[in-house]
Image (cartoon, rainbow, N blue to C red; front, side, top):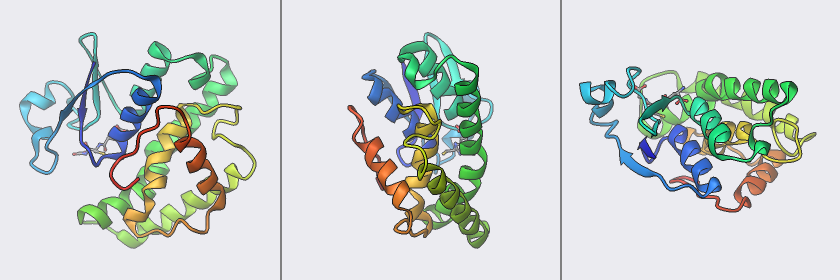
Amino acid sequence: MQLHDFRLSGNCYKVRLFLALLGREVELQQTDLLGGAHKRPEFLAVNPRGQVPVLVDEGQAIYDSQAILVYLAKRYADASWYPQDALSQARIASWLSFAANEVAKGPGQARLHGLFRMPGDLQQAQQRAVQVLELVDAHLALHSWLAQGEAPSIADLAVYPYIALAGDGGIDLTPYAHLAAWFARIRALPGYIGMPGL
Ligand SMILES: N[C@@H](CCC(=O)N[C@@H](CS)C(=O)NCC(=O)O)C(=O)O
């Protein structure tokens, strides 16, 4: 199994984290995003979207971090990570979509501007980030895990990185006690690994 990776990417990290929790070996292939390697023909042949992460397993390329989490859960994990019943899967899909939209546009964008000096509206991204943090913190006041089961699911792994990295975008995480408790639960999972900034 091979992962086209970028060390500082939260989307790549969520895949590395799940593989670590599953105890799966992966060959990491670093992609020079800052040098534009992801827009060159050899990379576009693997992922025409020109983005990391890309997982290659048994000759098949899977891209989009949320899609990779679904693949790994169905292929290699026990059912608790992505339960089969309709309600659990709908709840998880809702959080995967939230990770790709609200989280990416809020704390994800704020981090891009704050850490990598990417152009854009930092203030707007920070406002969106605060809304995201408040919403998730309120949800976690009532539930231990995002998809409301008694165990972590791929929903937690999809949403965790950019929320935990929000400080890189100039967001203060200290007011959010339920987020802090959730971070601690995730960090206590056997096999947990961090990334730069976490
Ligand atoms: N929805 C995608 C987003 C992937 C993404 O934005 N990847 C970033 C790195 S975190 C990237 O490759 N950016 C380069 C680009 O979009 O040109 C996912 O979740 O994997």
